[in-house]
Image 1 (cartoon, rainbow, N blue to C red):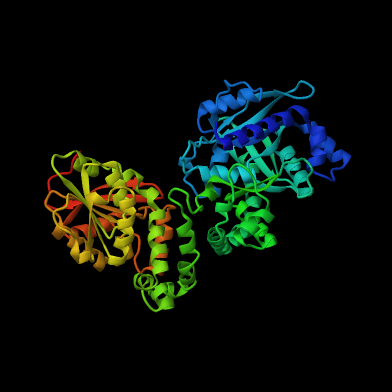
Image 2 (tube, rainbow, N blue to C red; image 1 turned 90 degrees about the horizontal axis):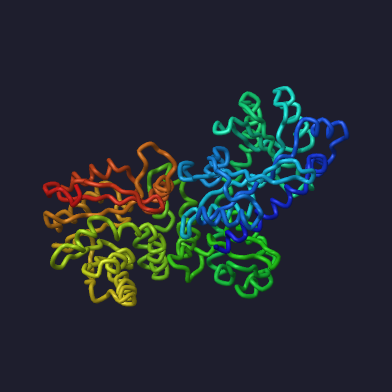
Length: 568
């Protein structure tokens, strides 16, 4: 069982004990300080304490069953879909709700007087290595879904409105809700008043049946209250960019541990920081789930560990790049929007390729940043085109055009020992690539070619353009693709790695990168049909399109007159 889920098991056990010991008459005065005797009696007469809720993230279903047994709960409780919590998680973390298989279980627990209650357990399975781990870390830190729940025994709409009014009068505020058709019940969530002493920040009123008419007014109040807060968080998003950059620049993650907390004074000495200011930074980052607090101080979460310098596929270079030169140029986004010109060029007097080439430290940072997104590459090594080349008789060559420090080519060669590689790049980049591939024991199977796009080597079997075309306008893309087409044999394949804009304008990292490319590079992201037209103009045909991690895509193209690809 993972350390993180051990924490979940402890939280589950604490929730079980709480439900066993409490009742409505003692909880309500703690929850709503200031209730008078008549209001308390009115609430107690019409509702009962039914459960407390906790959201956990088991690595697998059997881990959840073990946790139930450890907490004295029956392990055979059937899960149901949780529509409300799934939608809340999707909204908070800007994910597609279809990706979040949130389930709800209600194992029974006996109250102090023998009354039947439940512990409401929301579960989202997070296997090791899943990209849902970041959601789990944030939710554990903030306990958004932990709440107390009271069930109304006689769900009359007038009574329901009156109970909502009592909660509002004593400082509870609307905090969402919904109707769950799977169990025909309506849920009203409230944020507890700041002075609550119940130990929970959220309250639920559960009402059997469909009460969406009353719910509509409740949700309208919630939206009105949260609109200004949402906008304020958006307007201060730049603070998060800088907080991450400073966190990485000072190497704070490298001084922290994921298992146990470290005191602020100790951390400040280790990284050369002011203890008070560092504590403020860490509290801010805790809101985003990069660190968490415990009795010893601050500990690093799995999300924050991605900014450690020695983490596999460390994202530290990206934090420094987006918080450094690209942060400055994004401050001139208005120039791009008004004129269509590149803000980076306007600010620095030259394009970012030339600027970075004149500053070796920035060039190195850029190349390491490109490698930091290499998790996008994982499925490419098993792409049918690559596998077919590896299994074909005789030598086969993969040509990586402008492949940076060789991160992608290195993965392909490591996974397919029968393949050879050619890396085309600028001279100063090739030096770093050669060192990296030699260190991995792959240098003997890779040739290095100095040059530009006009120098694409001929006679390869698989050509790769990884995150290249989005740097350029359409005319330059056609030129690059024509160079590739001229070099490619008739039966060669071209794999293009990009973030592709969704055809329906749904939420995607590609949309954010489109703005970034226009502001900082002069390129843009494109839809798949746009790439198909560019390829056709260069004498190539788009024959496949598959998703990659981090909202990436791999486009498969061949010479227009080529035979169908392997597998159709």
